[in-house]
Every structure is written in C-alpha cells, then in structure tokens.
Amino acid sequence: MGLGAEANLGDSIVTTRLDKAVNWARSYSLWPMVFGTACCGIEFMSVAASRYDLSRFGAEVVRFSPRQADLLFVAGTISYKQAPVLKKIYDQMCEPKWVISMGACASSGGFYDNYTTLQGIDEVIPVDEYISGCPPRPEAVLDAIMRIQERAQDESIIKDRVKEYKGILDA
Image (cartoon, rainbow, N blue to C red; front, side):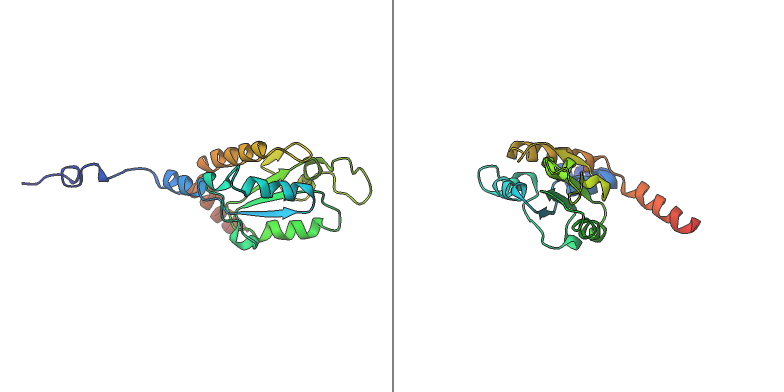
C-alpha cells in the first residue's frame, strides 16, 4: 500500500536548506581572477601549478574577465594610476564576490612609501583576506582560499536579496 518516499527511494534523498546547498556549491567552485602586477603574480603561478594544486580547492578555472570571476586576487604593487582600473574591475564582478590582497605591496604598499604607490588596496576596494609576505608562501595563499570558502558557507542568498529589494523600494 502507500509506502512513503523514503521507502521507495532509500538513501538517494538528501534534504537541506537552499542556502546551504547554494553555499556549498559556491565555496567549492570559486572562479578566481588574478590582478598581478609584480612578483606576487608570479608566486600565484606556483600555487596554481601541480605542486600546490589550486584545483583541489575548486578554484582551478582562472578567469580573464571580471564578469566571469567571483574571487579577485590582487597580487603586487598598485599605483595610484592603476587604482581606478582596479575599482572598475571590482565593480564588474558578479555577486557574491571576494577579494584577497596578496603580499605586502597590495596589503600596505610594501616598502614603496612614495607619492605614486597606493598604500593598500583597501583604500579603493573592500578586502576579505590579507596575505602577508614578500612574496607570500603558497601555503598562505591556500590558507586564505580556505578562509574564503568558510566565509562562503555562511552567506545567505535570501537575506542578501531582501536587503537588495528593500534598498530598491526605499529609493
């Protein structure tokens, strides 16, 4: 007679919340874009290569368009002339988006304390993770990616949409 869905399907059903399922997929399919301007950009190449294997963390498909990326690596020195370009790239990225400031120069200007060098990209765009070093070790980059994955697990697509619609209605 009327057997339940569990009896018919057995262990092939998984129940979860929409937020949890979407966040799980997002956290293990990050699409990075590298804005590399100096030696940290070269160091990122070693993270993506086979020894450290960035693909283990679901961030293998490096994008070359900000419209296809959700994780921005700023790796290297940023001058004041590059700051508007960096801001434009950030604005073109789709939501949700995360930013990693890689190395001393991107995080604080490094040893370039002069009139041409931006003293940290957080003056222009919000930063989610800072990686110290000159250049940072590949393990530090992987650690930052894992922290971004943890952050992605805690996002709420429903709450974000409610805030967005309230903002539209209030305007």
